[in-house]
Amino acid sequence: SKVAVVIVAAGRGERAGQAEGPKQYRRIGGKAVIWHTLKAFLDHPSIGPVAVAIHADDAELFAAAADEFADRVTAVIGGATRQDSTRLALLALQDTKPAAVLIHDGVRPFIGADVIDRTIGGIDDEHGSLPSLPVSDTLKREASDSTVAETVPRAGLHAAQTPQGFPFGPIFAAHQRAFEAGRSDFTDDSAIAEWAGIPVRLVLGSPDNIKLTWAKDIAMADQRLSGHSP
Ligand code: C5P
Image (cartoon, rainbow, N blue to C red):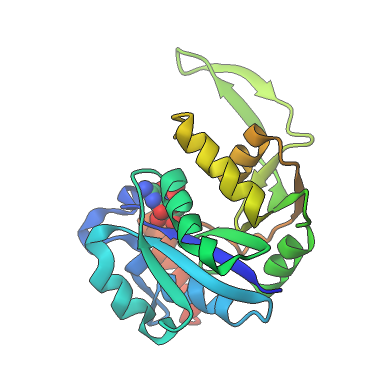
C-alpha cells in the first residue's frame, strides 16, 4: 500500500530573517522551497496522500506555491510547535487509513528518492526508521562560563534528518498521548517514538538533505539549483 506523508511547514523561520517572508516560500531555482519538497515526494512511486501543516497566515502563499499538486495534497493549519503541527497533520490523514507515514521538514527540499527508499525500507509494524549521518565534528559540552566543560565522544552519535517513517497507528497514538500528557518539547518524531517505546531504525541519510535554516542556506540552495557554483 502507499505511504502517506506529513510535511511540516507551519514555522515562522525567524532565523532566516523575516523580511523576505517565511523560508518555505522563498524561491530557489525559480520555485518555492515547499514546491521542491512536495515534488520530490509526489514523484516517488510509493507515496500516497500528503498533508502539509501550514501557518494560518500562509494560506495564500501555500496555494500559490503548491497549486499544481492540489489533487494530492491537503493543507491543514499547524500548531505552535513542530510537534503540534505534526499531530494536526496526522489527524488529517487518519481517514485515509495509511499503513505507514513519513514525516518531513518542509525546509528540506533536497530530499532524494534514495533516502525516501531507505527510510521506507526501515519501517515495519513494530519499527520506525530515520535517515541520519554519523557526526563528523568533535563535540564539546559548554560550561556555564563559556569554556569547554568536556569533549563528548562522538562514536555512535548520529545527526538525525527527515523524513522519519513510522507505522501510522503507533505514531499517531504516541502523538496523541504526548499531547494529552502536556508534552510539547519533542524536537523530532523519533523522540516521541522513543518516549512511547517504539524502536526506531537508523538508515543512511544524505549530506545533500540539508535543512534550510539561515538566509545563507537559501542563497546557496538557489545557486545550486540555478547551476552556479556557490
Ligand atoms: O524551526 P525549525 O527549522 O526547527 O523547523 C523545522 C520544521 O518544522 C520547519 O519545516 C517548520 O516549518 C516546521 N514547524 C511547524 N510548526 C511550527 C514550528 C515549525 O510546522 N510551529
